[in-house]
Length: 247
Image 1: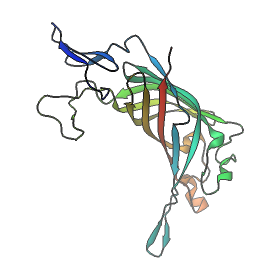
Image 2: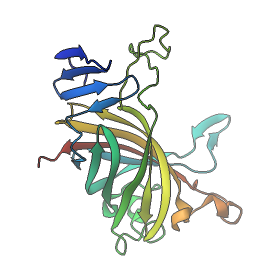
Image 3: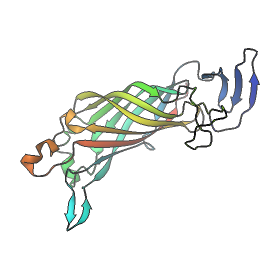
Image 4: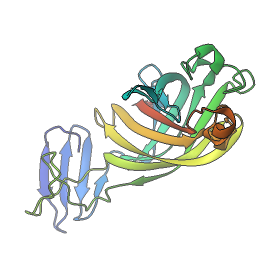
């Protein structure tokens, strides 16, 4: 589970398998793995705002052309800083958390960064902070799924399994922008880098329709009136790094 060597492996009288590694003691009952180190309750991980990154990506509705040469669709990316946040981990599962985003730092929106700070896009003077709070997390592996141990996509046929709660998850939560709150869901990958006493990383991508939050400047919905438009779909790519809070 941690990528480190086993320190012991024993079968109990009830047939369950007990093993240990650098991060603690575990029991496998044939279906699930119980982490006794973390069984005492939820662990809080504080988001490292210096190592965490949120990148947005947007593009125009129409492509640019020079003769038959395609010049692109005006795709643009920029970043925005995090103020603070936490993740809650229970038995190696992400179960909750929240993050605050500093909207005054958002850059390179459209072609003119200065325009981004005008109310046409975000009224950062009135709404300087956006938030996201996790309400539900669904895992892709229930602990009994056969998963290749060699990193390939081929499912093992010899009965071997790699049981882990690291991996692909579906995160649902409430996103608040411009004082409007909407429920959103996005796929992510969760990894424990140094066991339960180390660092956890979450790599996720959230795709939103900005007009759901009243951000409709240059919207594709107005294409026939304006003659050009920016896609309503905005992709938010995130790498969240969090470290365990010692209590």
